[in-house]
Image (cartoon, rainbow, N blue to C red; front, side, top):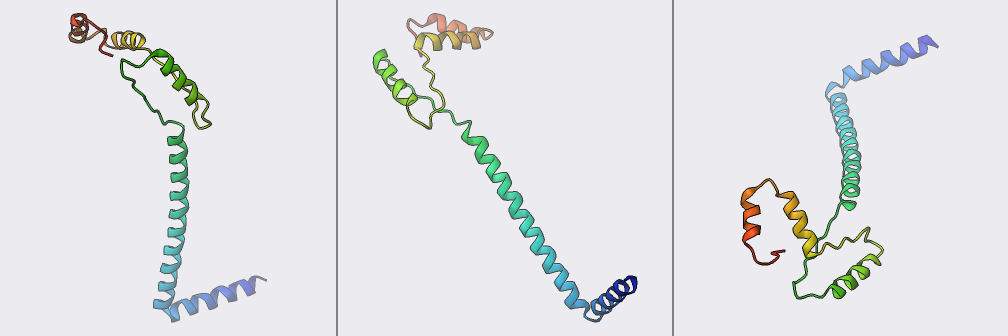
Length: 123
């Protein structure tokens, strides 16, 4: 058994050295084929992961004119919630948006002063 394996190895080395350029070319082509296959599989996995990650993080913001009634806004909100691809819908009123803006910028005196000088809600 050991002699058979040794004989196979000896003939393989002999044939490899006899046709050196052909053997080298074969090894290079095989290596390139394997590397391309591995690269394509890796690219496929990375692409699928990136697409799955982005699909869950899509956010869309809608802004309505100040003349739009609250009933119309709530009707649109309900219609959006019924869509199968929509995960959640959040309605932020003008007053609540102003409160959130003030809370986020409470440490910036320029913005606080600018908001105090305005007569109406800019949001």
